[in-house]
Image 1 (cartoon, rainbow, N blue to C red):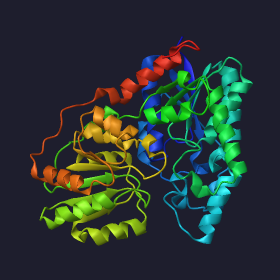
Image 2: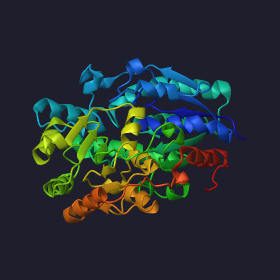
Image 3: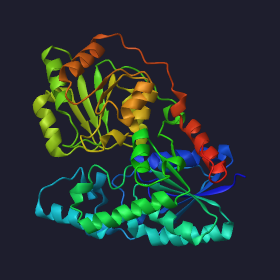
Length: 429
């Protein structure tokens, strides 16, 4: 029978960024399935958030119980300024200075699986108390940070009969920036042990894409049978009152992180060629971009054709997507990049605007776009094809697509989660 479900998540409002959206939206719509979430998260004053977005506090339903616990913020040893906390595992802070290298080495070898494990003992204590006092039978842990999964591992051992669902939004020991931490063989062995222990002991595993499904299923026997894919999505209510129109000037928008591991060369060369042909456009970046990367862009595209907007609150990011002519999605050029599906791709889809994708054509993000009928899917080497695609979009009649792709609605996706929670143990969905 449906009832309470305990959700353990490090990222929760006022945390910003893509990571917070998934479980904020699941928690919002779970009650419609008969499941009532109790959320355990970290106190904002103790948290290590790369971004904050106070506007997301308004999206937390008033009837959801949220418990915020203490934490030890190990990142404070790196910087007391949260704005300087490295995001993406230092992947956006690839400085070659001695301090940066030492910081990454310490991150990879003293804080396994990650520095946010300073929250674990507080969250574990509170979760165990609630489970015992309120008779909760279902718990969900979501990561990254993957240290949060170790809370579920301990709860499973402490509370016989507990159904534990591990939600993994990113790869773990195969994450694209893993080697940037200079992990020793011993550190790698410890981390792989944690990863395998979580995968083998969880009753259910949820992940966000087919390539991640295959990756985690390869880690141990019988993982595939208990793993299900529930992708990220978009919330229709985020678009209430937002006009998805074409601006007067052709506007190409990239939302999110960008650094030197993202293959931008073909895209920028294509825009340079487009500019030489006399086409007018504005190239708009919204989010975190290192100064070195921004300077390189400015050398290739005229200054009057580029705009850099810092990290924006979620409603503003939605507005900027909707007020665009062409949306750009670039996948980092890394070993396991097929498994990378930025959450913004589904909000891109919800705008009904054309999308230019650069990355592996058999990657999870490309598969979602192909499923929705998008044609602008290219590898990082297809400069001529990208140039033609951009030129064709500038020259063509502009009309917002009427396809809504309801299968990626957060409400629909939550109904799938509710079905998993309601199933009997050892029965596949």
